[in-house]
Length: 356
Length: 181
Image (cartoon, rainbow over all chains, first blue to last red; front, side, top):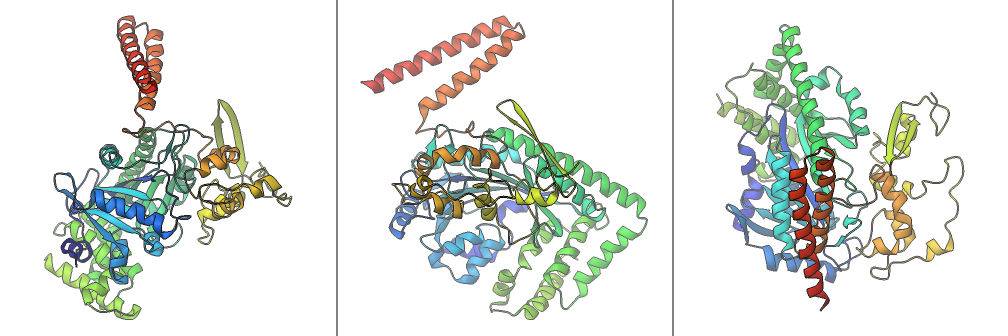
């Protein structure tokens, strides 16, 4: 096995996640994604294996083991070389998309060793470069993504058109190819039923709100992802500004809702948080949905100051570690759903025990 | 106010679009908004590609059946990747960068619908491949700034900027001459 592959797959928490970013009481992370394609090679949907090989070979020849900046050495991992569970683990860390796994043919990913940059190869587009940052860092994110994009473009002829911009396989990405997303923890707005009202208003501004886990718009663990929908006819910095404006408003509203909750709930909020803490600390069987709900309560408890001895990085770690592929990797064997619920409870107990 | 699409349910979503300076207003109910792709539905099985392929028939009122595709649309096939227009309409994805040229007569309405009325890119330009285009955009940006400066009667700064524009224009003309040779 490639040496660094082991850490990509075994460590639940990416190195870039270990520091707190701006507004970390509400914003978990910022992601900037740019979609790019090679000119004169059919997009993956219409490309045969040989064409896709041109792309993956070119990427490996020019970027594998190359250093973009200090501490940013790239490693190419071909999906062909991974076991099913290893691929799932990369999805659970959000380093690759579920779609990349489905594609199989000549697909792969370039990762920097700090896991801050991930470049998916032969996904829906030839190139999907993604950069991750802790907390809310849209402007810095865009700046660094541009630098990385320029660096790739030194060696790649991009499919670009003066009128339409960067040409992508899906018409929803054409133009800038930019999808900027902010992952937010919004327990107070959810609890007070404000999210239901805010989501349609946000949609009208050309932005999309999604629950991170859970189905459809339901957000298990009160974690939402907010991103731009429009990619054509607006500059990248305007897109980022709009998103930033809305995110800032949501941060303000969430903080205010938390303040009111703390002031008005008397002991109820504190009670709820400590009950969740108790559940996580002592349960023997726990489903992923309940775990996510309790972890959200714990995060809120830390942010409003009820729980002072816990660190949030352990919560970030548990969020990934309690997912199916990570659980099974941890157990070193495949597990049924029931066995996973038992293993999940055990890992949470063990991790929280370390904090005391 | 009733939904302007189905005329049955009350309109709960109100959109205002500005396209080329023209203001259009849309008042629809949640159901029609999802169906028309203005907002995302809760129904998970209704994927973005369903929405997209729905957009290809955007001119067709819901009550009427989609009109049969004209034969020219049916025959339209990208010479580079062999994707047909029908295939494009069905998958909602381009097969290669040349498809944008092949299907160009059908794209503006689609892009307008997806991208809030926009059809043209105004963002980043590849640095190495499109040096000229970058200069052209830079000159356009400066000209806009120049107008504002003149409007603000900041003539000294305006003069400086005008010199900058001249220098840029001369430089890009020189480049073009060299390339022409």
